[in-house]
Amino acid sequence: MEPAPNNLLLRRLEREKRARIEAERILENKARELFAANQALETRAAQLRQQNELAEHAARTDDLTHLPNRRGFFRQLDSLIQEALRDPDTRLVLGKIDLDHFKKVNDRYGHVTADAALTQFSEHFTNCFDGGVLGRIGGDEFAIALIVVKGVVDRQAISEKMLRATRATCQLAGSTFELTASVGLVEAGPGDLDIDKLRRLADIALFTSKRKGRNRCIWFDDAMRTGMLRQSLLEDNIREAVEADLFEPWFQPIVGCAKHELLSAEVLSRWPEGAMPNASVEEVIRLSERIGSIEQLDVQVQAKAFRKARDWVRSGDVQSISVNVSPRNMLDDQFLPKLAKRLRAADFPPDHLTVEITEDALFSDMNAAAAGIGNLSALGIKVALDDFGVGYSNLRALSELPIHYVKMDRSLIRDIAQDARARALAESAVRLGVSLGLCVVAEGVESPDQAQLLRRFGCHRLQGYMFGKAVSASKFKDAFGGQPKASVA
Image (cartoon, rainbow, N blue to C red; front, side, top):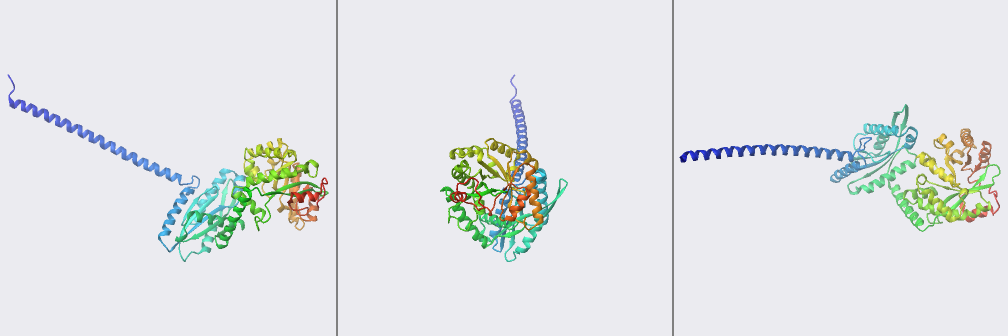
């Protein structure tokens, strides 16, 4: 018997109801899953945003001092400039801060103590100088920017506050030492807020602060602007002179202490007459280093010096010549092969060459310096430590490294004829060099009294205006006239 129509309808309705309920259950479960997935996505997105923010913060923050790093500082500086642009009554002050002689802290106490000193300095500055943005933009270089109200820019007050903030007493590694800084400041209004330009002007003010004795605050002014234009002209002249290979070697005599007989000559770089009027030798060398031309300049001058002095050393007119080498060259793996190549090209005997290096080259990387000096000695090239007595020489290194000469800095010689303390210091330096088995050369000798005292102290060789200034190769040759070891006193 077939089911009644009503029963069929009821069963169909029941099936549809169960299907609807199941569909609703599935939809509800899917909704819950989608909600959970969405919640997870939002949580992950929040985590990614936080990670990105942390990464961005880390990219803009100095790990050591937790100040803004170079990137972070100049980003904040850009925000300050935008603020200054919106208000015609505001002025922006940008400052560069460089710790004085911080390399000595690094070399004497080590990197860990030096890092701790940088942290203490930044904390001291932050506590003493409220307002503005302070950043660490280099090793021991900081920068500060602040907004001030036009018409009430009290430069004297800002300078005094800045110097108080940069004088910090550090107590580290069982020692107490004072940190000071040189500061260069520049002020600009809404119409003159070019970041690159302001950075250059602050750099010039900072350099002026260092040149005037450090531990001071200098504002950029019109006189510096004139100096900047002059420096730019000099830099262009140097580039052109190097490009045209115009620099020449000049030679300054080095004589024996006892009889003042000519023994050697130091090679010094000079430019063509009139090419750089009113520029000192020191300024030309400094600017050459600044613009990256010093290495090419040295190569050109050395190549010419080797060719000009080759016959002098072969004939015995001089025992040797000496050339100055920068710290960067001493740490360059290619320096020695290139130097050897120049010597071969000029047919100059390596055992008649002395390379003069400074303590910076010797102690910035002792292992590399030791290897470099050893390689020079292997070729027969002698090594002289320049500016001896004014730094903090590592005596163990001096006794262990194959150094042949020490050249006493002229500052030790200047007052020995008039000042007892200067005499005692110079005598100690000479005796120290002699006790280490080194040949001692005194620079800056200008009077017979100085020469006599140095001879009494036990000095071996003398160099200075008393025996002759640096002159061109032709004039130097005329000075000794082809006679071996001729006196030029």
